Image (cartoon, rainbow, N blue to C red):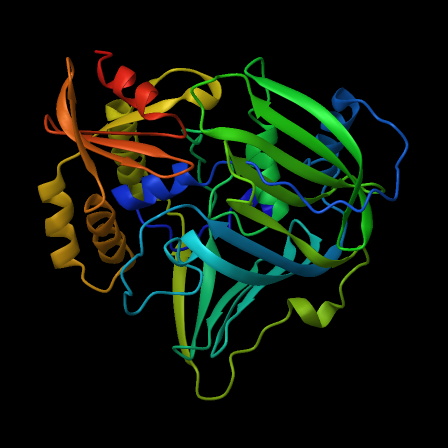
Length: 381
């Protein structure tokens, strides 16, 4: 996916989205038939194979297929918000979603997310890019400009990762001395023999049991990423191919013409000039305020946060992604537990894969860690 640049459209910058990103952590175990058995390869060899299969120099092999993403994150029932897109992060926090992908190279790919009543499509073909939303009958011609990526707070897949390649890249980039790695060579995904890299955090304070990445036995392309929370027998999150073909997709898959009667708009992803400078300055200002406590899988993000600001945002942006995210966070807060310690007092939110602490002194702490780790981080000045 061209390093995942284009599939993160519509990501809200609200506290609920921050929590949603941290929630996307955990392990998931694929159903394994016991056959076939692939030739043995070490974890080091497979890590190198996976890096090469998704590198800029070699590139992902041409392919097409159907991806299914499921999430069961242990959140309380979320509010039903209007106007939300099927591809918004909030919609990806629960349930099952199907995505169809066609990949013909870094400059040629298509992602489609069909639902019962409509479909969204992102089509990129060289310097031509379109986003189609059948629900609103709108075709948006995109101008895409490069931007700097942000390193995630936690080394775990997130609900906004729509393909195994995206999720795998996020995890593999974080493999270090804080992670143990082992290999299983008897997996099968989408009818293809696959190796499984099993990554587990060394930190006892992490809520993550393990992350399993299935690599195609022939191409070493990531076919599935699965996650488990500690003590859970069922997947908390997984994204993987249910059908995949490693052949060059037909050219017509990368062409798009707005249907008759469709509303045509134009938009730019990423800015340059003064807008880019303004956004860079704003991002730098936000980054300066974010504090990270701990290392590896036990990292905790600490950000300035006031509940009153979020409530005001929900009222002013009702129906938007950010307004919906604020409403979701308000709903989650109703399940919070009052806590206190030498660091002060606040409200604790815990799911099977994330813990968040909203302190009365205006901080939000989020991590895929136990409540004990969160409150310990709250005491770090």
